[in-house]
Length: 109
Length: 109
Length: 109
Ligand code: NI
Ligand code: NI
Ligand code: NI
Image: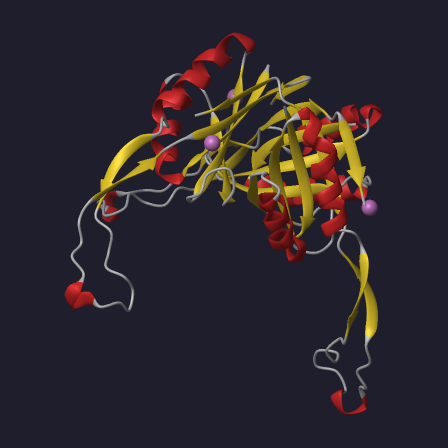
């Protein structure tokens, strides 16, 4: 048995939990802030049999893969709004940090 | 040294922490949601000497054992309240998912 | 690779994260309550290469070392305020409980 600890972006957490549950895994969502990823993040605990770890890691990497997102930034706060022309920019979102831990003993009641 | 990670129902967490503290253990309560258990849940971290793990696991299993609870559901929201007769039903509450992890190094200051 | 789980006082968490980040480490802050330390506490997850664990533990112990703090308690709530003379007392603040876990597999995307 393994315990997978995954730190992912908040915006990916909902879909990641859905995909894990669809495949029969159970994920516990811990409230977390800052840290491994710059934006708001979520720490998930996922229990997995040894033979399932590859699949769990693959699901996390697929759902949370870093990708470009086009955003149109707001004007500078308190800035010269009349001369500010907003234009879309590409930012990287997603990403995941995954720790797989050996579980010495597992109990479920 | 072991680190016991236990996911339990919110409603059991208070009494579980009390019983652990009474027996000399210290538990840290992490805010958590969804996941291993369908209802609101709590993740506890409990440090334990190797020889204490059996007792910690036994306390968790005893306090959080699944049991029937009689609840009287509210009427259907927005439903035909005049024809709705509430009657008590039995639901299962409790349950715990317990991961015991080997601690390679433990420091306490 | 190791996962360092540190339970520290809320009041030390901000400076600890700053010092870890300055040294190139990334820490994820989990919301936590009660437990290993009597006052409000924070649980940090810090990933570290094997050779970095000593430094991470040293930073935590230095920032969170128990120390005396002089506080002036408020008067007893609802008590005889007119006869209550507040005087400063020394309390111990700080402290940390650190678990170092072996990471079997580490992935970063
Ligand atoms: Ni079950
Ligand atoms: Ni102590
Ligand atoms: Ni990175």
